[in-house]
Length: 296
Image 1 (cartoon, rainbow, N blue to C red):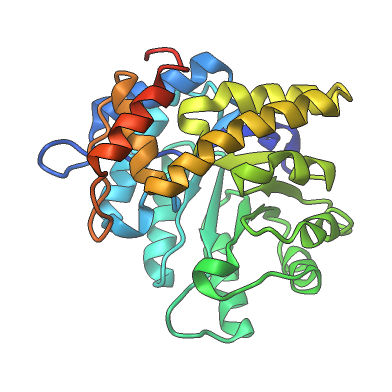
Image 2: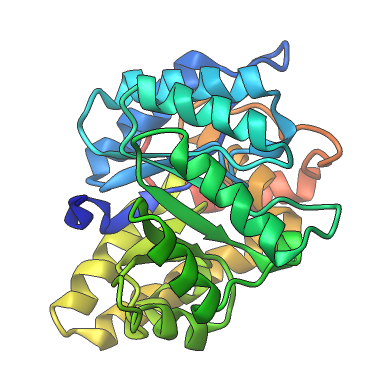
């Protein structure tokens, strides 16, 4: 059995910094990890959507896993996102994560070809059986057309006890609550930062989010206030967070987050194409937001 307690709490979905040559920036990865460890995060989700994982080569993702693990040095829980369209590539990355000492692997469902439910389940079974690490299903229907339901989750969790959790990136909080009624009692993460309090109220064990990279302290405070039964305070902070998120959406979420971190002293570089660079107007407004947070 796996210790599920270590997977609870606030985990940034790690952004991937690039250097001037468009290579993964090792120094900035490690600086970003330390910056958030100092704030008290519970762990990191590495190589996912926020990390532009599907815009990286398999080798770059494995390098990212290594840089992040080295910086973390066993201080917090590490989850490697290994999901991709090719099962064998996902398995290779999962084995790398295992060698590097990650606590779990995660995977988004295979996309593009309109795979059948049986094909999707077998993809997860193959990856889960390839290592000793527990598996967290990444449920992100808007990105791949696969919407995990309770019945399918029950079947998958019963098939292999390595399935321990679900990263739930959808506004369907009813589905989140239903996952928490499963016999397997999975760890369930809220995936949309703007509804963290809503996710917690429906039973989420914590959150994995992109804006945690630069304002993790706000989500930690929400988490603590909620569990201290101070829901009013949790909602108050959520409102503050959402005012910032509204600006990020206006200019492009990942590019905006990277620019804010640039302003805070962590060189992040731009997002990879086809993402577009920030406008000068965006940089000005985001620079003002950055002043709210401490320098790295």
